[in-house]
Image (tube, rainbow, N blue to C red; front, side, top):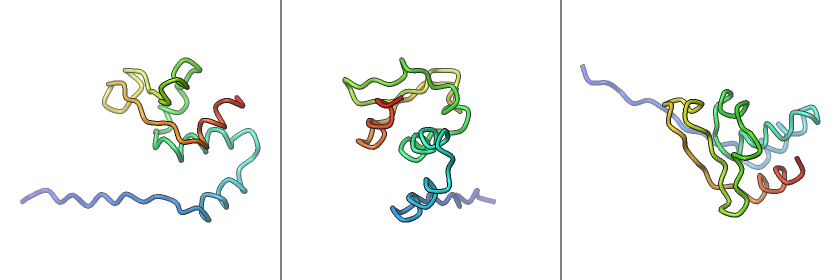
Length: 88
């Protein structure tokens, strides 16, 4: 039998994101914003260091070995994520 690809990708709309962040404790908001704006998995988020954030190029990177496939990857930074990262 053929394998069925039933993966469903869903993004939160602005209202859902607003409600989620409203329920977060203050110290968790930067982590949740980063998750929402990068799509990083839990282990990827928790492995981030300040040197993984490149403001000049506008990228956030997961180092090799921490990504699911063990290869590093980078995603563009949204303005929201840029603001949150600068404050940290």
